Image (tube, rainbow, N blue to C red; front, side, top):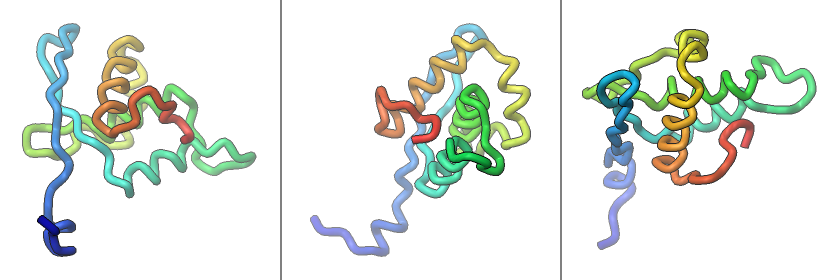
Length: 115
């Protein structure tokens, strides 16, 4: 079946996935980034000299988590200003969430930071 532009743009394609976080005694919901969010995220990792707002690798990982964790209504759990707080969480936990987020975004095995 061929869909119309209206159907294409009007369909919610940001499916969430539940990820177990036993260290925290429960689970979280993640959702893929929109292209707009991915563009913003990738801009933060710009390696060009003098890039304004450039973030470190760990900041980028925490930014990805902040951008992808959502509550049951699909709203972000964390704002960009929460990234410093996320940097205080377990590296293993953040790495596991990043791996799940990569898979959900169809970027399994790719380096997200700056690409």
